[in-house]
Length: 353
Length: 276
Image 1: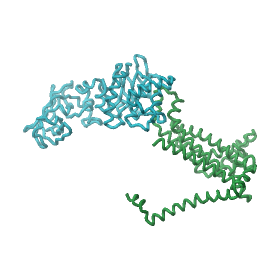
Image 2: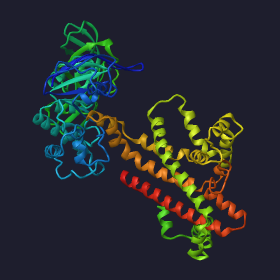
Image 3: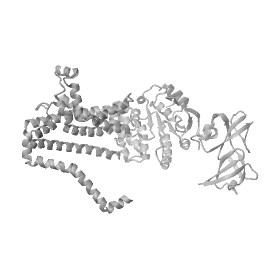
């Protein structure tokens, strides 16, 4: 099912949760709503499910208005962060609930449940109660329960937020495979960029109730539309700079930038892996720390007249030769973007890592 | 660490404290309980049955059992409904309402009885009017029921409330999204959770009602065969110097109360086990 959202807004008291949001989701695709907590992404999802009603705006399911459609009539599946399984029902009855309620005959329910148990790798657990399952198993039951009535739209609210890191990784890959198999249009909410990029076809970056960018994971990584997006995805350095033509000057550092920003004060945003740095006297910066983790090395350096930056290298990089704290280094910026300086403060935002 | 060490090798002081506690509880609860049981049964079961043969005693017991049962059922239903409203609706004046619900536990039961006697007695137009229309409250079973409902008001409400609060709102939303109507949602999400709590609290209010004396003694009028309840009967027998009849009814009430207490405890333990 194709989803279209037009000028959706929702306030809670004076707090604007969703602010004039419009987007489309293609039939059969898997889309992530990515943003920090409180950005409005969950509210957006809940409006699509009919659990919240929008103050204004329209929701279309396949060109039919779903704006005022009752939750029960929407034909959506919803997976909650904390599973929300029915504690007093077995796995089998949880999964079959949506069919049971619709008056589907017992034999058909049983068949469908069996099919979903196999699909979700839960066969043999049908008689268990939710309290007898692990977090990962509970989430798979929740997913099977949502899929049982064959929804036209599957909504997942931070589906892997409550399970531990290793299980989360497995569930992600499994969700992607499952989606490719079932093919139901799916929208999931996450604050984890890695999760959004690993699983989805498209990512909508949400911030302060607005969509900052709507694109493929590659587009968002390579062409972040706003400074917020640039800072939110991946480790970045943000330096105050003045812009002349296509060159940004930040202290002793110079960088060619892309992005259409008028000349003047700007924020220079450089990913930690878009920097080269090597030992050179006098150079432009002094190394402060060198930290190795796994196959990566992070170098923290202080750029003369600009501030601290972080660069990442593969551990075996020849550039790292002789670089120790106190070394003077030269820096070359391979890719950088500039954003108007007034859009936000220089200090790291809540979610920028 | 230290507590395990102590548990393994209790020293003298600890042994002394432990014995004192055991003695204290025994003297306070177990010994009086056994004393009544042995006195009540001292004449053999035959004497007990004989004492219960008395028509007055039987009618008093019956009155107590039926009024208490009505109270327990009403309490369970209305208490659950009240808890539901308190938790789910943001009523104005909720704090006041909540304070009023706990008040019956603080008010001396005799005073509670007097409150009802004043309101429904012949001194007010309400009591007078009801009596004139053939619906007397005071000195009639409705007064007994009302008094018992008053003293057991918080039981079910306070048992159901925390259970309702604990239910994840997402469970209800999940049921709705999956197509369940309000009734089905209640059956699936709420009833299994609050049912056992309401039931055990209802049983506890039944146990409490069976033994209530203070609230009833003024309201009921204590007319044999009509408004004399078992606890008031016990009091009357003691007053008139027939302790054996009093003991027989007491033993019966005691056994009933203990059975109800055990049943409520069993239900509560099962709820606990389910949540573990």
